[in-house]
Length: 320
Image 1: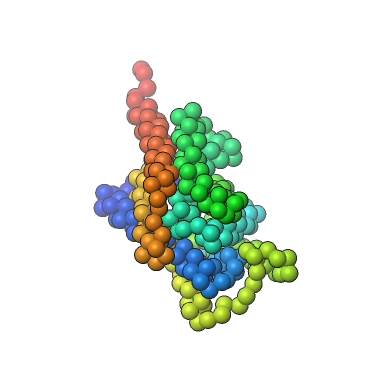
Image 2: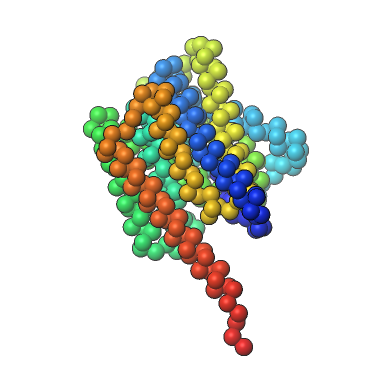
C-alpha cells in the first residue's frame, strides 16, 4: 500500500501485464481472510494473535528480500515516525477486520471494508488538502448507505461488533494517506517491513497488556495444533505475496487504469465464502454491495476525468 503514482510512461504490454496481475492479486488476497476466519472461528485463536503472527511473518519474509537486494541501506527512510504510525494503524486495521470475521460472513465484512477507497477520498481532503467536489462527497455518502444496508442485519444480531469492518476501513484509509507521504523517502519493500514489524510488535504489546482483562480479541492461547500453525504461516505468506503483487502491478500500469479491478476482491470473497463456509449474501446485501461498488467506480471516473482535463489544459499551447 503505497503511493503508486508513476513518473514514467508504461508500454501497452506492461499495462496489460499490470492489469492481469492486479486482477490476480484482488482475487488472491481474500484467501488470507479465509485463513483468518478459520483461525478465529474453528481453531479459537484470538484476532489479536492471528494479526500478530500474520504481520510478523510479513516482516520476516520481506526483510531478507530487502537485505539481499540493497543491504541495510534498503531500509533507509526519511520518515521514521510516520512509518511507526503506519504500523500502528495497520495493526488496528488487521485486528478489527479479523475480529469482524468472528461474527460476519466473509463477503459481508469484505464488502463493508471496500468503503475504504471512499474514506481515502474524504481523508485526502482533510490531511492532504486535496480538493473534492460535491459529486464525490455525495458518492462517498451513498457508498456509506450501501455499507449500512449490509451491516444492518448483523448489527441487529451482534450489536456494535458488526461495525468492526468500518473501523478497519478507517484505519487502513489513514494508513494509505500516510503511505503517500512516506513513499517519497522509503522504498515499497521497506515500507512493508516497517508496517509488518511495527504492527506485529504493537499487537504483541496489546496482547501482553490485555491478559487477564477479559478482552476476547486480545486473549493469547498458543496455537493448539499443527494445522493452526500451518494456517498462520499461510496467512502471513498470502498477505505478503498478495501485497507484493499489488506493488508489482502498480509498477507496470498507472493507478487510474488499475483502480476498478480492485473490486474483483468482493467477487472472490463471495465465492470463497460460499465454497468454504456456505455463506451467500441475501438480496439486501447484494444491493448494498452494488451501491458500494457503483459509488467507488463513480469516484474513480470523476478522478480520471479531472486528471484528463488537467492533461488537456497542459497540452493547449500558450497564446502568442
